[in-house]
Image (cartoon, rainbow, N blue to C red; front, side):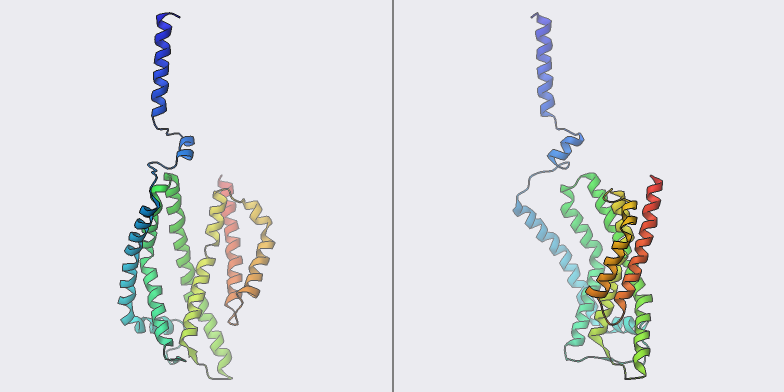
Amino acid sequence: MNIEEIKAKVETEVNEKANEKMPRTDDAALSVDGPIRDEEIPILEHLVELRKRAIVVLIPFGIAALAMFPFSNIFLRYLLFHNLFPEEMAMFVYNPLEWMSVRLLFCFVFALSVTIPLIIYETFAFIRPGLYPSERKFFLMVVIPSICCYGVGTVFAYYFVLPMIFRYLIGYSGEVAQVALSAKRIFSIILYTGVGFGLIFQIPFVMTLAVKLKIVTHSWLRDKRVIIYGLIIGIAFFVIADPTGISMIMALMAIALFELGLLLTRYIGRKR
């Protein structure tokens, strides 16, 4: 072996060792070594950070609930009689603490609605160090539209579904017996309907997201249409059935939104 060959061999070995010390930035390295700037942190530090972020959320939550409590009577009256019931109707309570519990529950719901952006931010900030850049974008891409769909569902329930249900119930029973509105029962129906329709209005978004992530296809959803309709009707009539008829309206709306989701996923398939 001559001198030139020895020099070439030495340079090759030096370059190989230098490459081994350099951090890998390809996709394979990221999938093995973890996200960018990922570091092993003791579980105690995670818990301490989680406690700090929980405090950051709970303090504004408590302040919002306390600030709303003195005005809860005014807002509850507006909520109930502005769009749902005639103003001449009276609201009744059937135990001394019933109205207080309604006011407290309303304050908690209000505080949660106000602090949702902060909750999302603190949650994202807590999990952000362990996410890839693409996963961070995916988190924001999912959460924000999901909240928007939820808001549309609750608004639809309050302005369209609940007035129709209450008008029917009051008109149906008014000729036979005097209607007495239980404050706790009425507010529970409002809350149940708002949450239910907020979740139902997620259906098109969830379907679109599943197709874009290639979890399912448009043809698969279309072929399973009858089975999905059967599940929706079964849940509405046998799991969450209620005498007010809200569950039946939920089932019809869920089927309509499923059809809307099929149209959206079909458009996505053609666009590809």
